[in-house]
Image 1 (cartoon, rainbow, N blue to C red):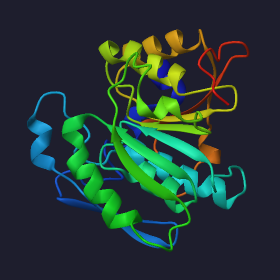
Image 2: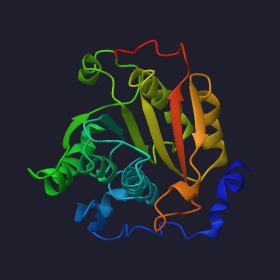
Image 3: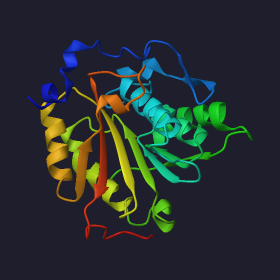
Image 4: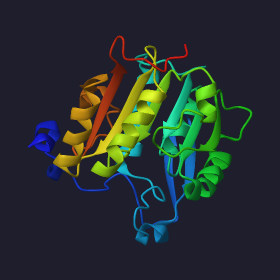
Length: 242
């Protein structure tokens, strides 16, 4: 009953923070109104989840804003990689908070992602930056991002969604993290088996904690979402390029 231990998810309505049937999603963040294009018709394609915004993305984005505003987190000039960016909400907010963000997703998701980055972050007044690149999870030691210093932050919302993807996700988390890297993941609480599979496997290389809701943005909380922070165990940073 892991999900119930994390917060009785059925006590909150599913997709309470988003409107997935709409062709755009708007959210006030970082002193401006973000407008993200969505493609609800794409959700009928098997395996496609990144065409709309999910509650976990809203929770993580607003957590970042709240943590920076309350000086729990410093993102200005930090290097960040956003995994499975989807519509780009989390990565765009990180850039608005001053991070140098690379938003990543599968090749067929990049067109919508680039549109949303251009709509919301292509502005000389934005303190950070954002760019988009393809990233297929798994063991890819030659990826362009691995030729650069490892990021200070790895971000991901709704990236723990089936057991088949867990191994590739963990390979990518290992490749893109060093001793200095903080990983922040937001997950929709849907399936005990998938979450347990991920956490059990991740504990081999990472120290993991659940971020309590009293540290989230007070207006953007849901018992259907969990926030996790991961850092690499000492001596496990075999790909560290600090």
